[in-house]
Length: 169
Image (cartoon, rainbow, N blue to C red; front, side, top):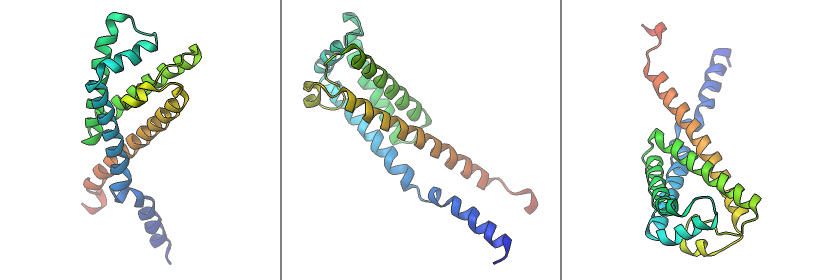
């Protein structure tokens, strides 16, 4: 096998995972739907979510109500951004996860035994799940970073493939 054929084969092999859209699409859509669901649950049960926020003892009472409505709306926007592959969705989702992890670390350091308030009304009633919620959020944040990098690589690869090679001109 000539060297030029080997170089061409290796060049096409390194791009192989990027050729199928599903390794990028499936986790992106899954995380997007997860954020839409979490935001909807919190929005429909904003009083329960407000009680969960109050348990963290971070915000003063006048700010708890707006936070209980604002956070779910931002989660919905972030989820929709991921679902429809808008660039802002990645940053917004990562920012929310970083905020959530910071609040969880604060609660663990402070020795608070509060509910996470993450996904469901049943979960909002549970206590002692802060460490599990932190690791779940860390895994989601890492996934969002990987997806963002994949998006950048795919976009750059698509742009490079549309630019004509000067040697062909």
